[in-house]
Length: 177
Image (cartoon, rainbow, N blue to C red; front, side):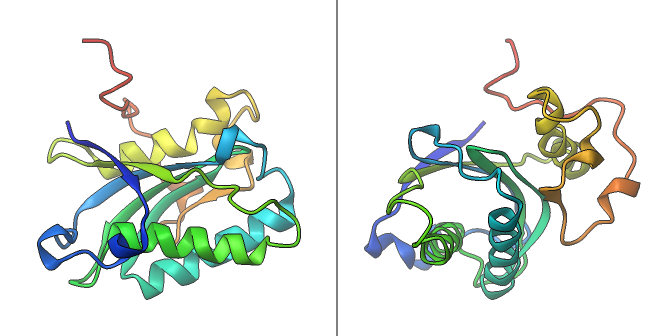
């Protein structure tokens, strides 16, 4: 299990090639709002954040196989699609874009400085991890069925039609030993 905690500094936005993401790797990313502030309940704000995610992922050479904007944090299942795929830069750009877009509505620095990422192992099925992400609003009792939550989705899959796996993935740090 690899769990990385990143603090974004300007010098890290473009790390050396040795620290860039290997091509075609899947990552579960979680980004929390500062002090777990409720940011993503407003449908208009969520729509803007999702559009920014789409733009940033295309620019940064990532496929977004699953996403979920929860009220106080976000989850992404990302796949690097090219040699320019740089996770730290991607997260930095998306946080910067949303910060700019919401500059008149939210206090500066509404994102936590750190974010969490987990590299999926060969035994981890990306569809199962996607369902873990999409089930988040169900686990938090916001909705009964995952397709009812309007701020979840995928830019690569018609996810409401994707069958749920028999066993939904659980993060290693939440799985009892």
